[in-house]
Image (tube, rainbow, N blue to C red; front, side):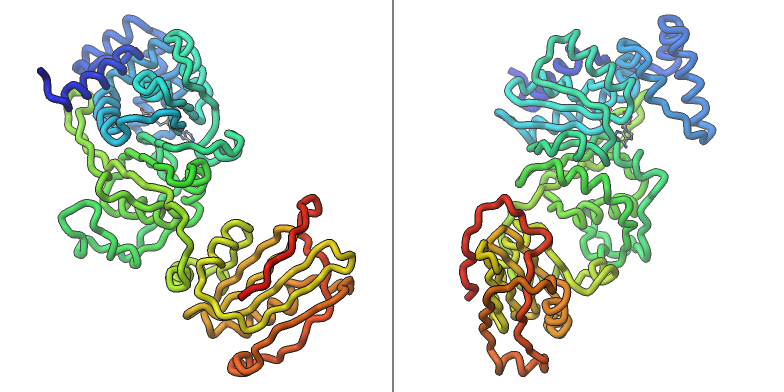
Length: 442
Ligand SMILES: C[S@@+](CC[C@H](N)C(=O)[O-])C[C@H]1O[C@@H](n2cnc3c(N)ncnc32)[C@H](O)[C@@H]1O
């Protein structure tokens, strides 16, 4: 009886074969066969390959996807072993995906996406690619094969989050895609030193603080992050040309709120065309499950220099994140103001206080508005100034205002405390939301 892993490999190959992939053959034989069978497509594709060899920015994917069969012949020659090694590893990572939703970004002609849909009949797959010819090939191929648990959309990585209608996926993968995106806009790594890198490819963490990342390179990752459900997994196989680029890639993941899964990330080895061996890092990154941040954790996030570049405060405008982070703070309120709207429709509490090494300012209304600002303790004066100016719209519609003030504590911070006696309805309030009283802060 064959061993389990070879059975799994056979299964992966069987699915790729069903889709229409074959193993590569020697290059010279491949090109002469291709020219004979598809003279026009082959001539066009050959011209593009030559131009790229000379450094011209030709797009190979339109030429490749001029025809379904032609496209699958080219993928068979250049990508079949990589797709097979990847699929085999993917099956090890996800033995079952019952009811799961998987998004393959940069799916090209859909060979991998379709093979996965065959291997996981009880999961749902979606492929996106920026190339419309590639998506046309995917759709035609899915129809030919009668695969129903799959859909395709023409979209870029960056716009997928908007185009897919805020759909959330359990697994998002990019296979040999991200290096294409970053080619013209490579993140830079300053002062990167190989000296501190240990033997294992994923033990570079100490070097991160020496690096800098171009924030514009992060938009694709932000989109991918937005497409994943909580606890979702991002799987990336890519061709990082050197360790410096690879290290920046992992740093970008970390800055995009992913947690690197070190034990499952690895390097995949496969055969390219003409049997040369290639190696590509497989990076598995997870969306962290939301545990409330402690003040110290929030502070350590906050003190990273990229936050300081923009402004001194870390502000959570999203009501859910503001509430989650606020509830995780070990806080001590110094000043708390409770306002009741003049029409009696609700109230607002604004609280200023300390939490460990942080000062916080939290505004919450009965209509669902939440806004949390965190700053180092020494910035409490600035937060107070923010509270008395921008947080509250100076529109005299207040019916009553009560304040609880710990005078002695505030005196420590030399604040000029005046009660606020004007309050308006915040711009961000949702008038359709039912009004529920805000509980007093402790
Ligand atoms: C090297 S191919 C990889 C295809 C496939 N994932 C595989 O593993 O064989 C890169 C694919 O990324 C697509 N692509 C390039 N830039 C993209 C972008 N900004 N958004 C989405 N897809 C993109 C290309 O059209 C192409 O199909």
